[in-house]
Amino acid sequence: PASCRRYKTAADIPTNTTAACYRAYYGRFAAWLKKRHPKTRLLSEVTDDIAAAFMDDVADAGASGTTHKYATFFRCFFATLVGAGKIALAQNPFRDIEPPAGESHSKRPLSRQQIAALLDTSTGELQALVALGYFTGLRFGDCCTLRWDEVDLGRGIIERVPSKTAHTVKDKAKAIVKIGIPPYLADLLAALPRAGEYVLPGMAAKLLEGRHSSAHRAVTSLFERCGIATRAEGTGAAYHYEGKRKVYETGRPR
Image (cartoon, rainbow, N blue to C red; front, side, top):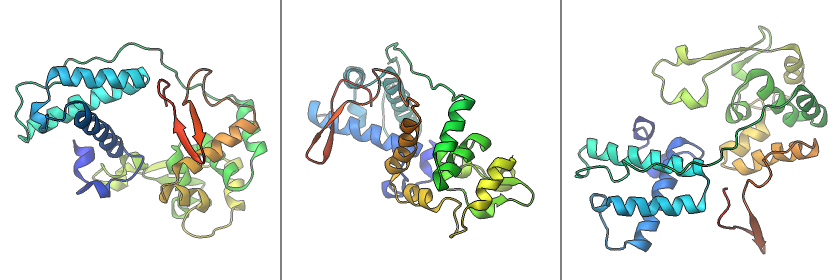
């Protein structure tokens, strides 16, 4: 699909992108196929039964939402390759696979009291990050990598092309999102040192260097200090440590 064609090689795919997720899905399937069906060497040899068996394994190891993502991707994957004449198949082996129904865990919006606690408990970049997310509605990555040339404190406006659409729009000028800066956020931004290109240089460095877990952990720790649960009881990954290595246990959604 178009979201992947702009990357010339696998090495060009940034982490935490749709294409990176697709690469991981395919990598899992290729490894599973090599182990379970070593004689199947071509994608055109993948049968309905093979597809169903793989999806059963995915369902056994993850949540229904994960299974749905895999099923959706592989329907698209095979349809794209067949449509481009890359493989010859009579029919898509994933065409009829439907993920099992399961309980979904939706995100709960924070209350004004919780937002106030997060802002009162944090300082510096972390406080500014929370305020940016709350007052602008920008995604986490866009808040972390916001640049000073996108912030106009004089006019009270942030102008940015969201990273989710930055690679797909043809006219960047029409894709710019303009967001007003309320006084509270303006005061926080004005108090930050202008040490380089990024408003939050520490958080920007974490994301740009691929240390996404470190960036997310900083926010999660703040939530925990404020007594705000970040996941529902019984959900999340189960893991243990072997020395310094974290080992995830099977049977629980990650």
